[in-house]
Length: 104
Image (cartoon, rainbow, N blue to C red):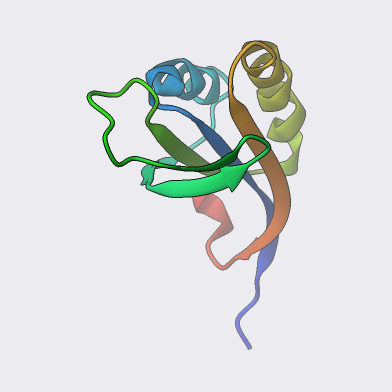
């Protein structure tokens, strides 16, 4: 049986122009890695949306995913919530199991 280790997965869905500010928060808090992927479509409080017809990054959404040790969650979330209190964004945190804990 392979041993797994519990870490925290933080998913941040934001408008694309904010991505550099979110990545700066992750870097400042020493998150060892993250992945940024485009969000193609979705549905939220204001209904359905998609990328069709968008020009440039304005209005585009991305998801930033980072897996971190539990001790980093609050230091990441505090400045993140300060940033997103005035912006469109969704943040989720959940437990995940990893097989190589030295990477996180």
